[in-house]
Image (tube, rainbow, N blue to C red):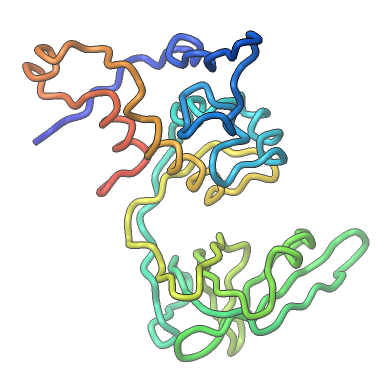
Length: 239
């Protein structure tokens, strides 16, 4: 079996090189680069943009390489994608369906409840969010969603409170059942946002990280290289 040996984490400055400078001595922007570099400003990572870059900076993440070294705090067992007839109360699961109804209403001074009716295979469930009215702008009618959370039977209706949601393309299936990395977050950044951004970085810049251990030592100790270790940390196939 191949084992992974993690070294003591080093400061990002010791691992990530600065962006190359142009003739004027200024860092090149991502628009002048064909691919991401470790030092590329994080706003140019797929799925980030300028607004999320400001939020990520609260976590000390300002460059693509910072995302690469933002390790999961834990892992969650994969949630099985279920049809309506397979649902069991108090079970963590995923469902895939279409948004057929939205309702945002006040439930007291300064408080709100957003309900989204999701039509899935064999029936429908209601997704609920308390005090998150902004979500009604994110969830549009007829949108195809994957929702993951604890399903509960309330009277005769299935409900999922504060689920993690992911928009799916028209012909896109739910992702395969793999362990889910759980990252340290900040307000305005959800775990699936972080996973998507880090996945883009892993695929493009993990191989740019300089190897620390000589190959002879890695072979003798039966440990993988640093780039492979980073990929396995962020995208494990098993727990």
